[in-house]
Length: 418
View 1 (cartoon, rainbow, N blue to C red):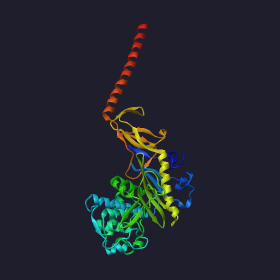
View 2: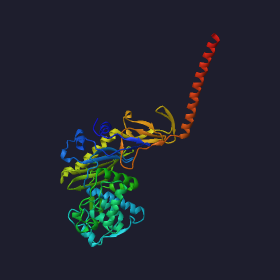
View 3: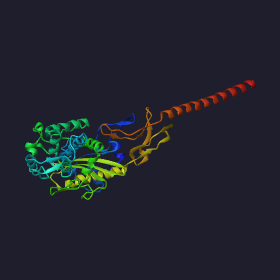
View 4: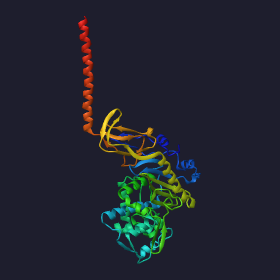
């Protein structure tokens, strides 16, 4: 069995305790590295590419793989996912709308000419919709586009960056601090860096925190996929294309991949990837694939993510683990009015159904979850349990009565003989 397997994970992670049907776990690292794992699958990659990594299920936030998930990194342009998150928030509450027009100013044009800052050149007087600016962010990874969105939503990039950090706290991203809406170092933004954060350089986060962000973003704003699945775009006769090489038609194409975002800094190449197959969406975060710069490392980040997800799909499935009706669990007959679906090992010997003191039925096997997530459960019908209790009482009462009757009969018979 390849690594990333349940057997390896369960021996590497602290087993979780099920309370109220909701497993709780502390973040831990598995010791087998991503490079060691993919090399066992025949890739033969150098250890120099070693990243930090985490893979979770989108359905319930279950952590399937964790390698140095709490180690600090520079996410670079993956930061733009938070900018898009808050843009969708602003769209939903009516603060902005997708068809709203933005006129490019001289400042915006100057932003787009700074070295290593923009993949989309802007010209004073051009007009773009909010929707087009969002595509510049998600597809072309334009840094000026993020600053434009920040100013449009909150009036200044400082206030918008404050909002980013506030949202990070709300999501439980306790190891994350944003310094601007783009993810570029403030040294590169020069006069356009947020004034409040001018003395700070890079954003810092972890693969665990990015996993929290992706999970919440896909749950609250699933329309993000409509942007991150794009591979090509054209605006004002400028062509731009994705850097996510796992998307359909790209060099590292992997079936079912439909986003999300890459990031590049002098610390390495990173990617937040989501992949949906067979009713099971998996989200992989790969941070700091070195060396930088390296064309090969750009491909390796996707190769690692692809193989990590593929191997975990061999181990796990999303399925109906119990249908509604009457069942016997640990010798106790229960009835449930709903089907129970969960993510479980394909080897059925590695999991079982349990019922806790609150009559919640859940799947039991060693597992852990990101903050705020837990395993699903269904409630056993209390009336049925009560009826079963009555039935059991009368059943055992009848047995006791029969035993007493037999004993009385024996005693009476012996009395006659004497």
